[in-house]
Image 1 (cartoon, rainbow, N blue to C red):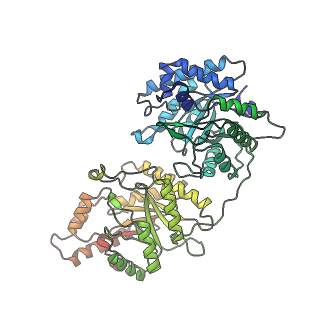
Image 2: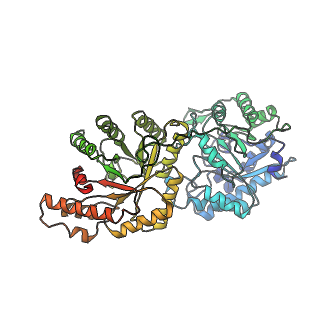
Length: 589
């Protein structure tokens, strides 16, 4: 009987944690996946122990079977998976009961230098399929970014039963910063996914609290596989307390709340599964079905921010954004002078980069908050992904919100300079799209009354324009409402942005940087990555010109750029070298 048919009338109890039970049973800290080929009898004994305890579904011993964690090539990984699949199938076939076998797929560490994760997930899934396994479980993930393409691709090859399980902390957030509700909603919206839920991360009590807060009628089967609890470190080993009675009671409560598939993760050995089997009646009562949660309405409040007027309607005029670079020291006098000048020019928003080039400057959010307080200007700090993890990001975003900051520019961020990397480490838990998803999530759950408005960056100089267009579309899907481009210095740059605009329909502010001297132009051309200053622009600046002469060229070039982008751009994003913002009035008038 297919698992889908069985689930119509029964709950399913899974096995418990293979890894922690392997370590407990054999007194070793070696990777259990290595035993698939080195000590297969151990693997088979563990599968049998869980089956004898009452598990209806067992997972292959392949959580870490990938090229990064096994430190092996893909062919060796496939051989490991095949060995694991055979051992699980053998253990299942020797049982008097019908036992389901799921191919277990864990996260591939992205800090391992891997660039083909999506392809590797597909190859792993395909190997299970070739071994006759038609149930796949993707477990302990923090989001779906890299597994979704593989899931859709493998589902086209064969009608597999696909389960996706996320790991969240006791507050209900994953390492990617996404909430439990957001994760389930996104996974349940995918046709190729059959069951969704959680495993690992938390004990049964916290998992119950998290699931009670999710009010979604997603129509998929629900999964809950909590840890035994929280381990203590004893003699340099992590040990879980024996709480089988409590665990089985809570797991049974999860089943009564609508969980169709229940079992255990870290710390749960066969004795836990036996106790759960004795506690839980797995026969579905008449009328019971998957997806019992109610749909929760999301606030219809539209984001505020500089793209909308106070009444929420879109603005029609060309928008003007101006960047002010925060100081490299604690002296903000000159920046505040520049901000007061901009107040008199009636700009729409002032932006503040987040320690560009990985060099320390005043924090962009704090600088924005002070400028807003002293001038009343609309402000927009840049937020990059380099320096903070998801916990710190969410804290910072809430801090920005209570300081009446309504706009954000979200960028991946420049890496830390090579010379500093021995002393200073980047974080980069996610890129700009990942951070946008966090803000999107917070808009729905935290900032419901007045959501944040946020946008992204466009690099029109990227060689692969199709890739850049796809990035823009991804950012728009993650809630980006506007885009700021790199500085435009040529008609070629403008045409590339025009193509992006036509392909995506995005609201775009063209970047304009009025260079103020030949020296400044040469520096930008040769020292700053991502900015292309053509030779013909450089030649327009006199060799030994005065300050006034250099600024005159910069103003003239800026006006020309505005002329040949006027028909498609939604506004302009000015960045003035050395914060010479007084030039703006000359450019606009």
